[in-house]
Amino acid sequence: MAAPIVTAYDVTKRYRDGTRALDRLSLTVPGGVVFGLLGPNGAGKTTLIRILATLLRPDAGVVRVAGFDLVRAPGQVRRRIGLAGQHATVDDHLTGRENIAMIGRLYGLSRRDAARRTEHMIGRIGLGPAAGRQVRTYSAGMRRRIDLAASLIGRPQLLFLDEPTTGIDPASRHDLWRLVRELAADGATVLLTTQYLEEADQLADRIAVIDHGRLVTEGTTRQLKERTGAAVIELEVADRLRDRAVAVLEPLAATFVAGRDRITLPAPDGPLTLVRALRQLELAAIVPADVALHRPTLDDVFLTLTRRTEPAGRPIS
Image (cartoon, one colour):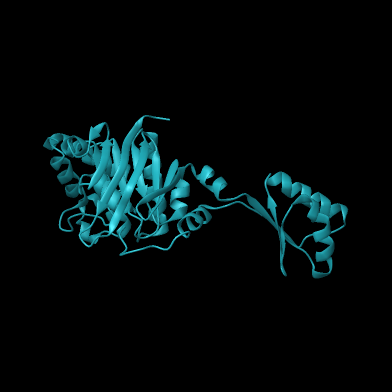
């Protein structure tokens, strides 16, 4: 795994009303990956992103981004990051091209370099002739792409994407997913917060789940799913065959549930357990009406990890 591009240790942030948005949060983000940050509303995700982007100062703790102390050298950090927030921050009265070039100039690029990189980004996000139109004529998906292009024009080592696909159509969402994958393939690090668990499952190399301002768990999607629980097999058989099916399957599992409609049993070996179950049913001349192997989803992980305690205080995201 690559060297960390973000290290945060015991980061705490309180607001004036006494709400603790981050509570001694420690987190490490390796370089060159898409790192997903998940949590319910009020978990502290946006607060953490704002701190890492130097928009907020932590009350306590130590944070290093790209090797620089965030509090002591915020200017060095800003030169190495890009940010696309929850809402596209573009000027409606400028064209798409002018919006991207303006951010390039704010990054300190010369007029020539800003123009050159702008054209490169227009091609990369697939904007085409629409780049010459005022942004106020754009769809939500096109505005999002402009915002992403502007955040990339400075070639950041670390890009923050805070719920980048909220409010856009499925086609535009998949376009943005493609762009994020391309960024990671080029060696950039992307720190992604999202409310769409499918999005995190599709994009993230590693995921951290935070709740109440603390890190709950961290790992690959596969590791998180395995921690939540093993796969299960669901079988549907005719009412007249249910008791016999239960008797046949009982030796395969220490515990399982035989409900009115379905028989559910653990599948610790996944497909192998499924094959054994079907073989036993076949020997007993029982043909199931329906059968399925279910593995834990990221939704299961999220709900399991964030429903253990009730949220306290005013929601802070």
